[in-house]
Image (cartoon, rainbow, N blue to C red; front, top):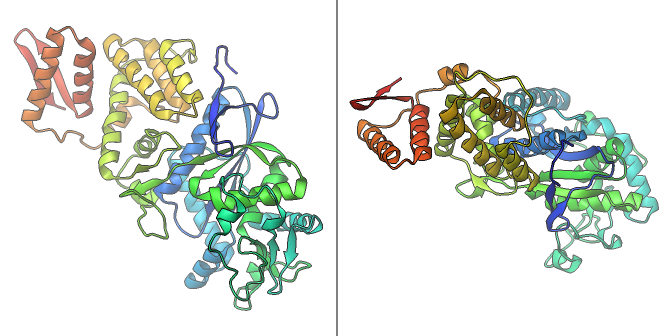
Length: 465
């Protein structure tokens, strides 16, 4: 960890508070994040989750930790089987196709690959072993319909993540006729094969041919790759219950040990205040958005909100993000980088660090960078350019040539002459009042809109670039 680094605090869903982060090993962090179910293109809501944990990964590394990062791929489930049947292709062909598209899309957004990217179908033996352990611990039972279920009533800690008692969770629930469940909260770990399902969707087991349930997949992959106890488990807030609650029950029920120490959940990306999702049909695929917006603009847009907070997707917000990112590249234009490493003791870097150590607060970190950009606009000092680029790099930003970015950006103007004249007058008033910070900000904003100011003895002239 760099000298002078403060203690990282993260919001632990299981404790419902910010807690100091202490990994199980002094210089190593083990982290598991629930990844994609691959039967369609990734949408921008998926990008929000993936970038949230990409930032966690980057900040842990910047803090001096080695990170063993697992982000799984679900490549067998009901939706995948259905989509493959609809398209007349094999399950493997469908999932390989969309895994390739996923890598293209998230790679464009600067999301780093995890240390391990296991596919569920590669870990079926481990899943069956885990189910066997739970059966021996009297936490699993084979139902009359051929499924194997987890017995929730026999795991006394169930509900600790969601903060609900079994009585609250069971309120109004009924066992579906013919389901084979003893209790409505019991969940399936092994699904008996259906006659209409293709052979590639079934595996042989002592319970009969079938396939794993979703929850057992993540438990088995996490335990196999990270061990019985690890540091961070993450995913979208919609996974808190039942998926993550069920993972805890399975994993701790099998090992008798606490599963993950810290549980992180990112907030939704919404459309009109409603979660963006394929089931609601209100989603925008990453690749469609990237046809209209630079990938770095999309990344910047998603970083402007702290990862736990929900926020709305809109073209207006993306346009604003493009203008704001342009301000950074305008500040960096024509200022050489001095080539030195990031100085974490510099004032803006200290503010950035404090923000990131406060539960990865990227909006506050970006505010420190904006102040640094304003200083760079005034001083044109290589040391300031270096600090700005290095801080941006921690977040996966500002690593391109400034001229290349500015030339590739579409015209940002959108300001009519009267609006420009009003901003010029406001800047002149600020200069007269010796409020140079405001004057510099207005000049930078106009530059972001490709409006160039030229001060002379006769006054301030402007032109569109």
